Every structure is written in C-alpha cells, then in structure tokens.
Length: 303
Image 1: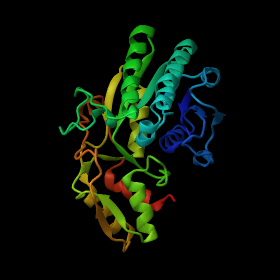
Image 2: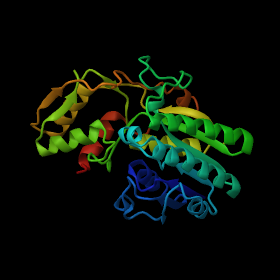
Image 3: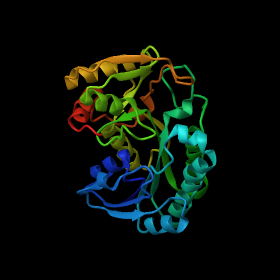
Image 4: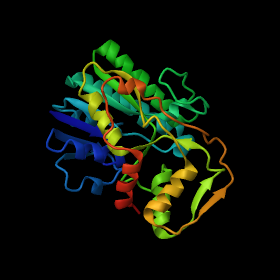
C-alpha cells in the first residue's frame, strides 16, 4: 500500500507517518508552512516539498497512491481571520486539487482532517455530528466546505471519502510557539521553565483533550474501512476544566509554577465535548487516554 500525507511534516502528520512505518510506502507533501522536516527524522518516507495549491505538484505526489490523508491546511484561526482569501485558497482550492487528482489517479480513499471548530459557539454538549454547523472563522468555514466537497466527490465521482472532526489534540512535537498553539504544550513549556501558567477567564471552561495517538488510530481505522464515510467526531467523549488541566500538569511535572488568571477572551467557547458514539459504533477503540497521553507528552516536552 502507498499512502500520501499532505501536511505530513506537521504535528499530527508526522505521528501518522510514524504509525505507518513498515506498513506502507509513505509519501509526504508539505510546503513547510507550519511543519518541520525534523519531525520526520528517522522515518522511511519520500518527501516532496510543495503546496497543495499547485496542481502539478499534487499530481506528482499522487502517483501510485492508494490512500490520501489530507492534513495540509492553514491551521491558525487568527491567521484565517486576517487572511480569509489565502485561507480559502489553501483549505478549499488546495483540497479540490487533492480530490480531483485522487479521482484521476484512481485513489481508493481520501480522509480529511476536519475540526470541532465547525460547531462554533453552540453551548450544547456533547457535540453530535448531526448538529447544525455554526462556524465562526474562515478556518472553520473552510473545514465545513471540505466535508461537503468530500461527500460530493463520494457521490458524484465514486471516490471513497471520510472526514474526522478533531477536538483538542495534544501530544509530543506540538509546537508551543506556533500561532495555533494549544493549552497543553504552552502549559508544559511554562511548567518546565518555572513560569506562570496563564488561564483566560475563570478556568472553568471545559475541553475534550485527546492524545494524538488516538487521532492517528482513528485516521487509520477509517482509512482501512470501505464502509465508513461521512463525518465522525474524534475525542474521548469526556471533558476537563482548564483549571484541572493546569493543576494536573503542574503535579505531574513537579513544577512550582503558579496559575494566573487573566480576563476572559471574547469569543472563547465555554464548553466543548465530543459525542463519539458514531465512531465507537464502527468498532473503533482508543489506544491511549488523557492521563497516559499527558505523561507521555511530559516526557517529550517541546520548546
């Protein structure tokens, strides 16, 4: 089997490449916009530096491919607000290049990395795939567009597709300095540096933190099944307050850092938790857990 991972030198893509070592020929297409070549050190792969917005490069990368994992995207919500046109070019037109090229090349399946950002500020929890989408940023809008395009190509072009809505992913190699930096890597970096951990608001907002190994497991699970298509949430189906997350990281790291609260940021979602019934009904089972993932991530701090 030959797989293509667009955005494969990024945080999630590099873990996916690790998962498929010895199981498949791996092609990575990445323009290194937010990924890093060192994330792929020691991994057997073919690297093509280029953008999904370049159809000729996509066609080259698609040669002989059986399965495509489309992770390449503008991933920063704030950047998408500042550059909505560029976000659409990368996340929508780039995806169309991938879908058209995959169809022409006879690819068996395309799996899209989508996002829980599609649910927007809807306070209802847990988030169920059938909820009315309320995207609040160009990033979220383009991810929703992507889901619709995958379903269109499945229906009209007979290309097998599936989309996974990731919740709050964390794990080793997640960059705490990136524009899309999440709470876990920032808290870990500051804990090891002895710096204050900053929480916006009262810290009682909840999130469904999911370790990257379970994101990878879900991607591989859906890719390996011809009967699975449409959209699936990927999380643990549980939630933790940001206060509890910070306290747990301080305890596990043995840090003497303090927790500091700042005013709440406008637009922040108060509660987010995935309904994972649809994914579990397919036979998927998690390979990690929040606690196990935090311990592993603390052993491999970034930054």
